[in-house]
Length: 173
Image (cartoon, rainbow, N blue to C red; front, side, top):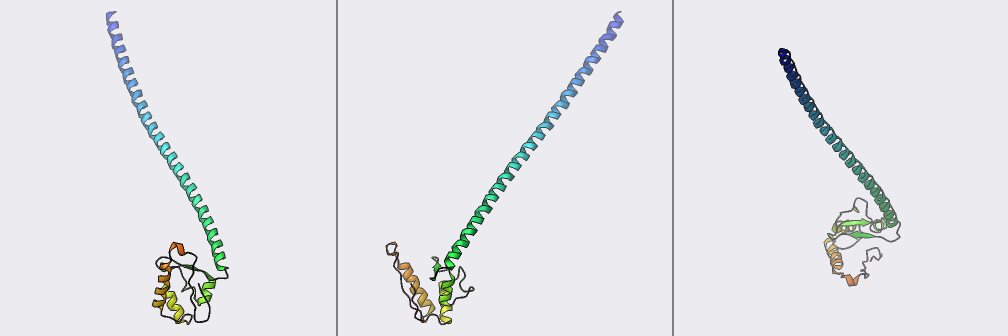
């Protein structure tokens, strides 16, 4: 009977060791699966963030396109208003470069679209007018005189205009 007891004890110890190994294996596999699951969750989170960023970028782009469309419409309206004015209109920036002018201004001074382009120097426009007989003066002197008058205006003198008389009897101010 004692011999049977020892054999059974060895069987129980073996079975217990086998159970410990199995439990350790199950724990190992479970921890590995949890690690993989954490990676899957992180990947899904990153994907959700990327999708959210993509949607935000699309919304910004759509808003930008709408703003650009509104700006283009306003520019077309302004261009139409300026070109349909019966008076000639011209504007130069602080560096004496053309910002905008209308068709009437170009007609008054015999300017072509190649000459009346934004960024063109005032002196170049005056030189073109002199070459084509629209103005009788030296380009440098006339440009300097115009710039002197423009720079001489103070904020209190707004509304005053200067008058120039081209060679054909027109009056500009």
